[in-house]
Image 1 (tube, helix red, strand yellow):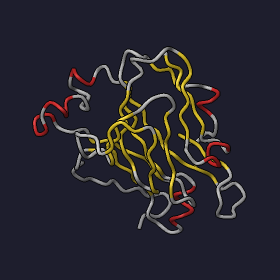
Image 2 (cartoon, rainbow, N blue to C red):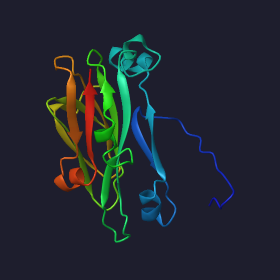
Image 3 (tube, rainbow, N blue to C red):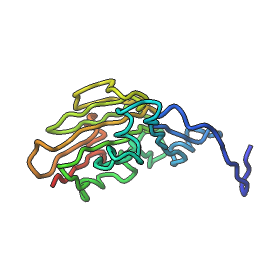
Length: 195
C-alpha cells in the first residue's frame, strides 16, 4: 500500500502492442476513477517482429511520419454526486472541440487511440459523420477487427484504434460524437476542421 507522501515505480515489459488503459485500484475505486485517476499508454508494434504492417504504427519508421495521431479519452462527470453523469466529454472538457475544432490536414491519414473510461454508464460510443474508419479493438492486431464502419461502441475500460482519411473529402467542418443522444446533448459533441 502506498500512503500519502510516498511513491512507487512500476516496471514491466510493455506488451502486447496496442492501446492500453491504466487506473487506480485502491478503494474507493469508483470514486478514484470518476475523479480522473487513470490514463492511457501506447505500445507500438515492433516492425522486426511484425513486418511491414507494423511500420505505419512505429514512430521511428518513415511510414508513420505522415500520420496525424490523437489520443481521445471518453469520460463523464457526476456533478451532483448521485451516481448519474450530468456532463459527458472527449478529453475531459464538454463541447471543447465544438468551440475549438481539431485541425486536420486532409492529405494525411488520421489515427485515433480511443479509450472509454466513462463511469456510471456501461457503454459509450464514437460516431464519425460523412466518413468511415477501420477499427482495431485494443489495437493488438494489425488488421482491422471492424473494417469500414462509422460507429463503434466500447464498454468501460475498452479501447481501440481508429484509422481513416479525409483525402476524398472537401475542406470543412466534420462532426464526430457519441451516438447516445443524451451524451451528445450533455457535452460529447466535437468537430474536425478539415483543411
